[in-house]
Length: 192
Picture 1 (cartoon, rainbow, N blue to C red):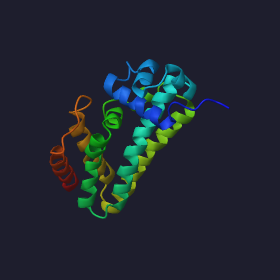
Picture 2 (picture 1 turned 60 degrees about the vertical axis):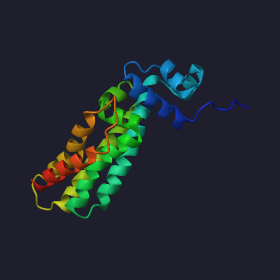
Picture 3 (picture 1 turned 90 degrees about the vertical axis):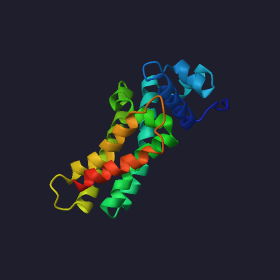
Picture 4 (picture 1 turned 180 degrees about the horizontal axis):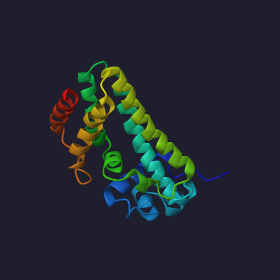
């Protein structure tokens, strides 16, 4: 009978995400992750194939958490006003999961995927593709006949909140007062 695990896979990925947010990607070592998780270094090595694989899992977990909220709200949007509200997913996600926000918005995706096993790189690509497909479908539904509808939605729902939230990361969490600014800018982008 084997020993009981010191930490679950999900908790280890979360600890690695917190370490990345606090230290930056380059300084996030297996030792730092073990310290953040409160487990022996051997427990980390026992649970993951490599640092690269674990960092890819960190990006995937953050992208899944964000993407699920973003795509659900976007699919439910029946008007441009409701679509503009989707721009608030970014600051709200970042306030609720600061480490996930830092991973997604203060770093490049490819830095987390460098050296990762092919199945993890494929999964990360699928998550990015799902987001693009969701925006494309919403543009067809909400901006029918508009030639650049996808780009307009992308600017309003991704570009505007990214730019606003990124000012605060990684050191701080975007304040709730920022939501009014993001929403006004998203509305303006959709109305243009």
